[in-house]
Image (tube, rainbow, N blue to C red; front, top):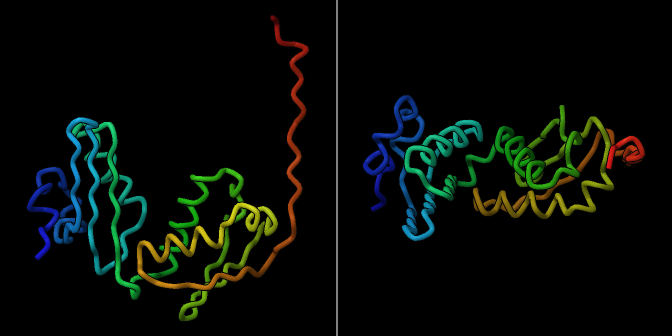
Length: 172
C-alpha cells in the first residue's frame, strides 16, 4: 500500500492539501549528499502544470534542496485537453525552437488520436525537433497511453530571420 503524500509532506501543503494531500506517493528518493529529492505521485484526476510548479517551488525552497523533482502519474483515462496544453508547454520550455507555434492551438482528442490544429504554422520546425515522438513519449510516461498525433490548420512553414549582429558601435 502506497503512503499518502500528506502523511510525509502535509506540513508543507497548506491550501494545496485539497489537491495533493490524498495522492499516493509511489516514489520518494532523497540523496542527502547531493541534497536532491525525487517524488512521484499517482492521481486519478489530472492536475494542471501551474499547481505542480507551485508545489515544486514551495517544497524546494522549504526543504532547501539543490534539486527537486515532482512527477505525477495518471491512469490513461485522465488524459485530457489540459494535459495536451501542459505537455506542449513543457516541450516548449525544453526547446525554444517551438516558441509560438502552439499559441492558440486547438487540441481535438478522439480515442487514441490527437489532432493539433495549428494557428501559426511551423510544421517543418515542429517535425525537425522531433516534437511528435517527444510528445507521445511523455504521454506514455505519464499516462501509460499510446497516442497518434496529427497536425491540421495552418501548417505553413515559417522562415525564421534573425537580426544581423552589428557590433561596430560596441566600444572595445
